Every structure is written in C-alpha cells, then in structure tokens.
Image (tube, rainbow over all chains, first blue to last red; front, side, top):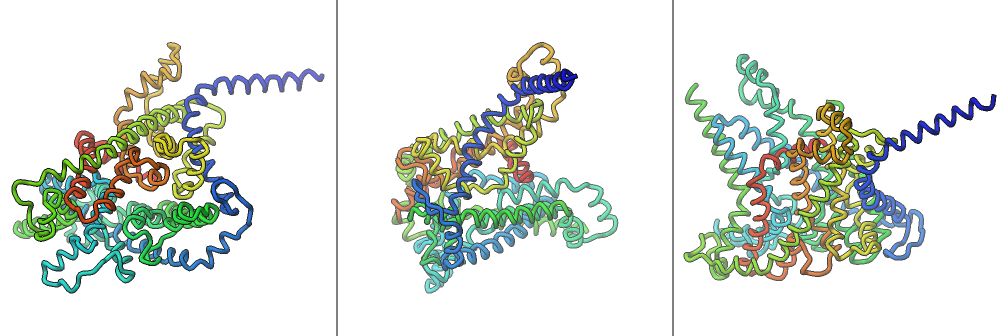
Length: 304
Length: 275
C-alpha cells in the first residue's frame, strides 16, 4: 500500500534523471554564452541597481537609500543635461523621418537601375568610416580654422566666423546640426528595403488610377513604411538618451555645462570624481527613460 | 509625357547628386588636406593639393596609427571569432536541442537586447578590475563577446531553426555527437548568416570608444578609435598628418567591405529590424 506512491515518485525521479541526462548536450552548448551574459551583463546590471542606493568609490560602499536620487533631482547640471537630451531627441527624430526617407525614395524611384546602384553605394559606403572619425571630422569643420569658417571667408562673410563649439550660444546648435545631410546608412537601407518590399501591384493599380507622384508618396509609400519609421524613430530616441561619446569628443559638456548630457555626466561623476554610486543612480534614471521609449516602440509596432 | 518623365528623372538625379556630394564633404575635406602642406592648408584651404602630393603626411600618419590599427584588428577579429563560436553553438542548442529550462534561458539572453550598455558601464569597470583583466586586451574582448551574444544568438537561432530536421535526425541515428552535428552539418549550411553575424560584430566593436577609453591605460594597447582622439589633441593644427590618419582609420573596414558588402547590408537591416 505504501509501495505505490513510493514507486510513483521513484518513477518521477527516474524520469527527471532521464530528462536531465538528455539535457546535458543542450546545457553544454548553451553554457559559454549563458555564462558570458551572466558575468558581463546580469551581474553588472544588478550591481549597478543596488549600488545606486549607496555611496561607492569602487572599493567600499555605504547604503544611503534614495539620497543619490534626491541629490539628482536638485542638481542643476543634471536638469540641464535632460533639457539638452530633449533637444537632441527632437532633432534626432526630425533627422530620421526626413533625409533618409528622401534619399531612399529618390533611389527607389530612379528609372535607371545602374544609377540607382551607384547612388546606393554612395550612401552605403560611408559605413566603413568609424563613427569617431566622422565626429572628429565635424570637430574640424566647426573649429576656428576649420571648413565652416573658411567657407564664410569664401563667400565674403569673415565677420560671421566663430568658435562654433567653444561658445555657449552656438555649441549645442552645432552639435545638433552636425552630420548634414543626415542620411544615416542604417536609415537609408531600412527604408529602401521597406520600399522594395511593397508589392508591385499596388503601384500598378495606382498608376492606372492616375495617381500623381505626390499622392503616391503620401498615400502609398509612407503609410506602408510606417513600421520602419516608428522603429527608426524609437532607435533615434534611445540613441539620443544613451549616446554621449560625440559630446565627450566635441565639447566635453562645455563650455560651462551648456552641452552636458546625462551619459557624459555619469561618465564624469564616475571617472573624474570617483562617485560610482551617484553615477549608478544616473544610470538607473537613463535606463527608465530609454526603457519607456522601448516599451512605447513595442506598443506602437504592435498596433500597426 | 515623355518629356516630363525625362525632366522628373533629371530632377531626381540632380537632388541625389547634391545629397551624395554633401554626405561626402567631410571625406573630401580630409582627403584633400591629407595631401597638402601646412602652408597650403593655411592659405588655400579650398584649393586642390599642389603637385607633387605631400605623401609624407601618410608616412607620418602610418607611424602614428599602425599600432592602433593592429590593436583594433586583433581585438575586433578575436572578438568576432569568439562571439560567433559561442553564439552559434548556443544558437544551435536553443534552436534544435531539448533541455530543461530552455525557454527561460533563451528569454533571459534575449531580454538583454533592451538594456543599454551605459547602465552596466561602472559595475563592468569594477568587475574587470576585480577579475584582473582591466588594462589588458581581454578586458575589451570578453565584455564585447558577452554584449554581442543576444543579437548573435537571435540571428543564428532563427536561421538554424529553419534547417530541415531530417539531416540532423540522420546524423543522430549514425551516432554523431551534438557538437559533431553542429560542426559538420549545421555550420557548413549556415556560412552566409554566420559571416553576416561576424561582420556585424566586427563593425560594432571597431567603433567602440568609451569602453577602451577607460578600460585601457597603456597607449600601445589602444584601438584606433581612442588613438585617433589622442592624436587629434596631440596634432592640434597639424592637419596634414592628422587628416591622413583619419583616412587610414577607414581603410581596414573599406577593404573588408569591398569583399563582403552583401553580407554587411543584410546584417545591418536584419540586425536593426529585430531590435
């Protein structure tokens, strides 16, 4: 009588043992990757969350509750950095939804296939230029002896010359305007492949109905690449919140704190002032903001 | 009708020529200055370089940058190989093998796509120090490999899952181990996607700046990104060699790109779409 449940649980044990034994190859092959992300992603992530509640210099930490967050809320530099992020974010969205779409539309509707191929190359090959090189080139363009001032001399306006990145009135604007004509390789390729994915019949039908090109762009092309527009806009938002190496190179947050952004403030708090706990609190806020954009993106993409 | 078509086509080409030229302006500027003497750059900024071209700029730039370039090639190359290796065996496990907790592990890896790296920057620095890999190339490579796993596994698992089951079943009946199946059957059938994942990875690590800036100390170990920034502050105003260095920084990727453009383009679009 007592034997039945016992043998059943024995059976279950044997079954589990079998399952685990069958699992061994799977575990072995997945182990290196799982181990890598646990050590270098999960552990630092949790450590960062916990240490945002501490005073930490990388060696010793003391629990101080929400003190770091309270300090941040009253920190003028931090608030400035968020306003700057908002500006970069709006500029980022604007850049994403204009120039790459224009370029991909033009290439897509070019009649000559050979020219379309050539222009595709023209917009894609800049991929090989390291992002840093690009930023450093723009640093030169805006520098006092750089291209922009030389251009102003050329058109007979030497009085308009300025130290574009070195002056608080122009530094932020220069950073925002950097990168003309704003045709990102990623944006161009994503839009172009989305346009190429639109069924041919739609365009044929539109042509039979006598639709002009303006109607076609706004009634067919743009609505059909809407998912890509949303996705790239969300990526632009996340990029605006997270990217700070550009500003680190161009102005280092200055002059004063006029071009400070949260990422750079985090970087400086940690590696110039050894305030690791305070910097971790900035990281947590950045995580919340970019997380909100990600969720918004997922929601919008699902809606269609 | 015919004429309006030609007019429209001409307008499109004109616009594209303008946009394309504008996009390449910084590159033209760099190339132009890289062949000029300081005096030429000072006095005739917009003029083309005088003959003979000042090739010394490139010799100097090569002296300054070759170590940085080699470091970048070493770090990005090794990272990509390791990433693709451990990412593809994991991708195979997640695509084709049964094991307890598979869904949980896969979800745990994928959700990392949503976590920005800036959030883990400081603890990662402390961790690298505690592991004793700070200020070494392993201090770059290991975190790069880990950070690339979610996207790599996602891309490869998706491809592996579509391969026909019969091939794998046949090999299993013949008594092949799972690693042998991966190595002899799965991998040869998946070369394009594996190359794509590898290239995507090379491109990402090649561009890394902040992490090598803080995780390395020795100038001789720096990758080209940090090296260029150092050079730009050391060679202030000496634009000739500096611009030549900027040009050189794009050459390795240009060479790689010439042979693999197809994979690059696919990697970029598929990588982004799935994030």
